[in-house]
Image 1 (cartoon, rainbow, N blue to C red):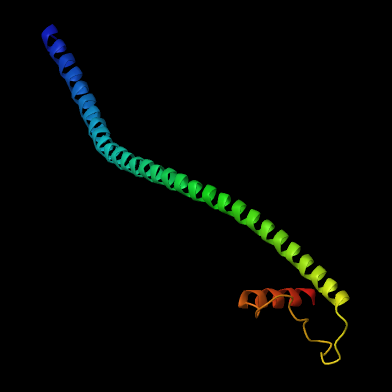
Image 2: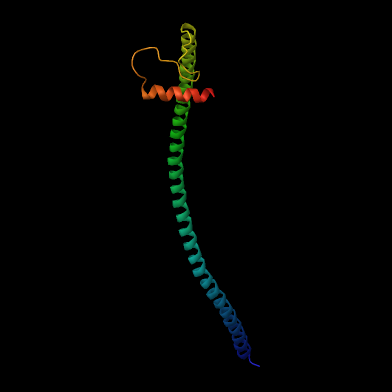
Length: 146
């Protein structure tokens, strides 16, 4: 057998092996390319979702800051209202005590009149009729006394 024929046969076998390896490599590269395009689509959609989430977080931060400012303002108003309520309660207590003291003083200085009923309110010391505000205050204090 001539050496050239053996060498040609060996080259043909190596060439067939190379073609087979090339076909296998081509299939794998095709699969990898298909996977790459899917991966790129997935990466794009993930990037879009991340951008939307970042935008949403920024909006939430702005809303949270605005809400915190409103809460702070409401707390300040609540403190002011609490102060005014305490002052108003103290003023009402002081007025009630002064009215009781004035009634006691008036009851001591005047002899009981036989024409007045026991449930009638004592006449006011001073000229003129009582104002609506004064009558309302007196009615409120009577209701509070029970």
